[in-house]
Image 1 (cartoon, rainbow, N blue to C red):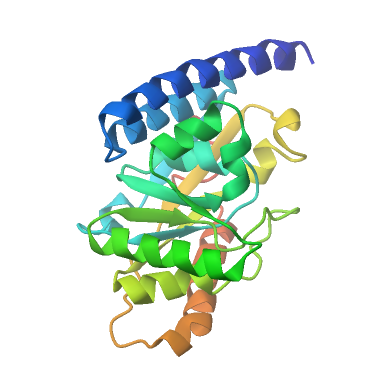
Image 2: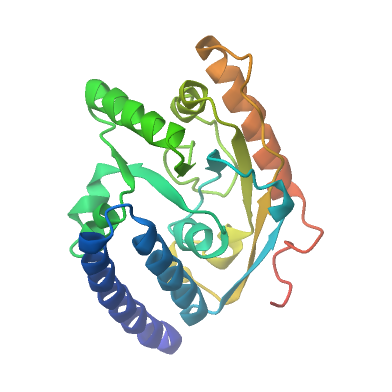
Length: 243
């Protein structure tokens, strides 16, 4: 409890300070690249405050061009883990409600991340079409295809929308397994305990020759790769190893 009382205000102060810096940077650099750099700093500082180490493997699989990175989603901690340790200039596809968070939401907007209105099918399709355009122009995106956080850490069904996006943009999908996150935050961020999580980047799944009707099958193919990576507890990304 004492540790949490120290960590929470410090994490909040860092978030406010770097959100302000990102908002200012976004007014100068409309590409979002400066904000992406600032977000990486914010993420690594937060993880250090929480005494969470991250091991990364599979960086040799990173494609040279734009891609859709599909990761499992067990906790709010997934976002700083990916922002801090996936060395790619990407934008996150997220729900619109994030924009309502004071300062942080403005920083997300300044970074040109992509908000999706899941309550309105027409607006969601329009946002995904805009995302596909930006991907074709060279911007990678990170998606959490489960849609919501898995309550027990198991990798649940991947929704097809993100995979239709990759098919429309004509870019590969890179499965990413976030390993052991639930062990570090078993009951949400307030239950955070020091530990190590893993990021496993898998070989890209190509989309050439696939049709939009195959989005569901593609989603399940990628889900199985991500789930297998999460189940593998050996190797440099095994949770619990020292950083």
